[in-house]
Image (cartoon, rainbow, N blue to C red; front, side, top):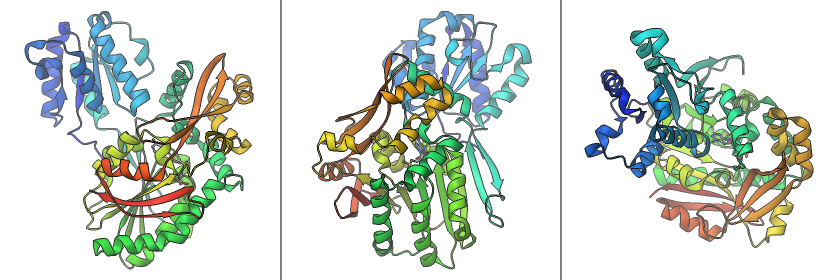
Length: 464
Ligand SMILES: C[S@@+](CC[C@H](N)C(=O)[O-])C[C@H]1O[C@@H](n2cnc3c(N)ncnc32)[C@H](O)[C@@H]1O
């Protein structure tokens, strides 16, 4: 399974290596990778325009750094590498491929990333390795052991290695950056802690959120079936968690589609979480369901388009559990918008402020199970004594964050190694402002469903 050959590749190189670059671009082009960005080709007159370069890095999927002594010595190329690294760690990803075209000290930022050594292995081997590395980011495996008799295809996005995740976490900690919620659910321990939190009666919001789906899934189905004139849908769930919500949704989709097959695409960063989900769904999967798990990042949804199987059915995409608030709304909604066809539907699960003040909102985030979830990654990856000290200094801060007017984000702050760090956050929306925001983001609202006290809602959308 190859990534799209249309993905943009940014070539970062020093003028002194122009000859090497020209040959490389030629080889890439001959192998189908034609969408290559290098400033000589893209910026007329060779004028160095940082704004355009920075924008190009932002839009690229791959960043090839042609390393040499001139590369390491040049501020311009070091800036490009830093920009790419920032995108990789803070903005949701770019695959950095260091290519060694001359002996030099490897820049510390990419020391931990395996590089392609043209000096040691020669040109022929170097190109072979580079092309393999570009085509190797989604690996397909078949999992049979999870549920006996059920074929589960799993696609692994190779850029999410635990080594890189660990390093990203450490960098975020040391630079006092907000620690992305993906660290909370990453490994087996984390999946267990999430399960414990969901089972705890104290995590009331989760139970309310499940109830809404349980009560209204049939209404949601009827609404989209009526709107589309179709009865079978493929189901894509973004950020599955332990799979409880998938169960309600799949039960209705399979019953209504029978005897047609429902294609189910659970997508999650955490493979253990996907294992939990598939185990939890158990016998249900023996019915007319075809499972294609994707171990991948929602912020790179477009990478997984190639996994979707030929189908005449519209997709039902779900993004539940108040998840919107845990991401950069603009980025995630853009990705979802690009991923959806005009006939597809989206169910968004969101949490609402409903007149609660900051103190009340913060109050909901002080439970012990929640602390376990939040501190788990710290305890796992960094000095545990320090992490438990941090636990004692834990407090919540509530403020407006992101672009949705009148929203409130809960940040969890503590001191770690003497510095403040921001561990995780959740956003609550003012419902009317959120609806307007979704319309501004080119979605049209079909219907919305709320729980008894209006704290949680499920919004059913289409592309406008
Ligand atoms: C708060 S749980 C919600 C689970 C489920 N949607 C629910 O409503 O119960 C968040 C889930 O999203 C996954 N997740 C977080 N960030 C992600 C990302 N960037 N890409 C893919 N999955 C992500 C986590 O691994 C976790 O399983």
